Image (tube, rainbow, N blue to C red; front, side, top):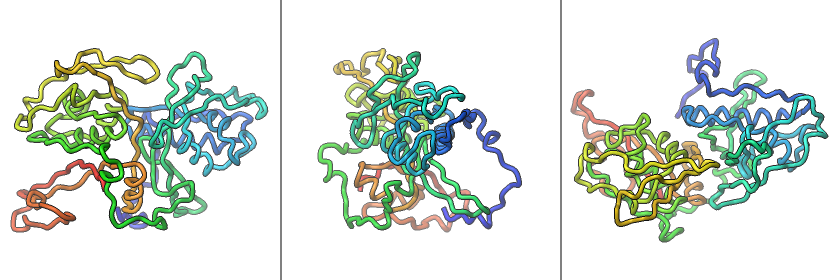
Length: 378
């Protein structure tokens, strides 16, 4: 995390198109519209979504949505500011180019027209479209939002860059001019106390090394009822290994694109079960349009009949800034993190864990080390 660019060996040539083929979008023709502030913001956010989601999501966000609807101190095709564009992308969100297409290049600024896409809050900072796509032949009007971008220094002559980091997202510095360093943060905070009855108790993983699924399902539960991990473990098999390990990026992709049911519907097996005993996937779903899914099977628990599918909006990444993480937990609830696990962790009982090397007498090849995905609640 303390990489010094000056000491790093950087190649003389680099092209993002070659490193991430199929994830960097082709530029759109601005025509007579002087709205580079909107085109560049939408393009960077689109590329970041594709890269961070490992190509699972490749939307091309609509600059026209920004041009026509972001009118707060902006002048549309007569000019604007990227700070305002990122604020709008975070607070209001935009749809894709397929949903809200750019006008023909030959159109003049006066011909761009009024805003034809509104959204409303659905809680916890998330937004939902309240209008159909301006393109009447397209029906997916999902709203994509960003967390704040971060600035890069002008380390190269005459260069000051800004970018968005996430599965659409990034975090470091709030466009509303909020600086976590200057915010007053209490010495103690517990999400269980702020949101009583809404933070779920942890389940026993037993012999199942699927923290990737447990932490993701619990994190999603704060938004989506009481979704649980067994549906993920058994059914999310794309580059995942169930109880033998997996990746949280893939878990969030599955939760967003396929969705899961509740623990009552698809209960976790007994803790003593081995990975091989977890079983096959017993819950499938189908698309019902506009990004929504519907279960096509009854609940594996024959005594339970509610097989509603819960889906997630896109996740976003936080920086490694302690105060920023603290503020995020206070404002929006628990966060997901990955921690390194060493041998001494198995004798940890309480308090603040700090790694102590208890295996220094062993040869390096005999020292055990791994990772574990956890939920931070305070």
